[in-house]
Length: 140
Length: 234
Image (cartoon, rainbow over all chains, first blue to last red; front, side, top):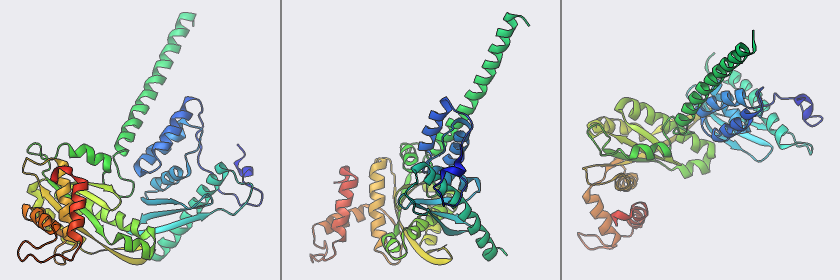
């Protein structure tokens, strides 16, 4: 899948949501689990792993983001979908609450799938920058 | 290798693959079941876990016989003044505090029922420990994006003496919690017959001692809430 080329022209590349390698029956199971796992951080860990292993479909945006945060040991308090083009996450780190947001550039050529892929990648990138900033302020 | 051996080896490979997949599926399902009972905002159980735990309240020596109801004070104001993230962070913070102070230190079971409503189940043997820790909820500070915010929580509780079911106990605890919110000096109130009588008398609109008409609408609100929650208490 040429994900790099699937974003609308002029939109900077962001890492898309992870995909599994297997198809077949795993796709249905993975999709079902992804649906179940959209709100629960612990489930997301299992869901992410199972989804990755069994399904070729990406997790929905919220589940994919929760899975990423869970893997990094960051508890998500709330995920907010701010319309189709943006998302916000409230998470706990170093005994404080922090917010990261992602806003996709407006473009008529977005599809729901590549828009969610872009928001995922941008959120991951924003989170990494935010953590560096927090660590610099609070730890060093 | 003849045909028979080839079939045998194929069967064995398929069986191994199926066994391995089945084990992984069972493990995954166990995780799913466990996860389905966890709250998504706090490290506590969710309403489904509460439903499961509620069935054992007041039954047997080791079972919980105290139902505590707690909710945040002024969540609406927090949301309106600082945004929903601040309100959600308050819920998350209180959830963490409940986990540390009541679950880990008092051996309680704790759940977020919905929104900012929490339910704690504990043994009456731990009631003293619970009361010792309740003061920590009177003012909880937390930081959102390095800005300090504050929240507080009030509690009401009801002790099972065998005759009341969980639905009645939680309704009583909720009434006591609402009274706790109106008390300046205490953030935790135990339900009692007296409270029940007060609510009943005040619902008639007159003081039982002097006959003066109450001007505060709070007791009527409590009665309506009580009836909504537990028709058995009418």
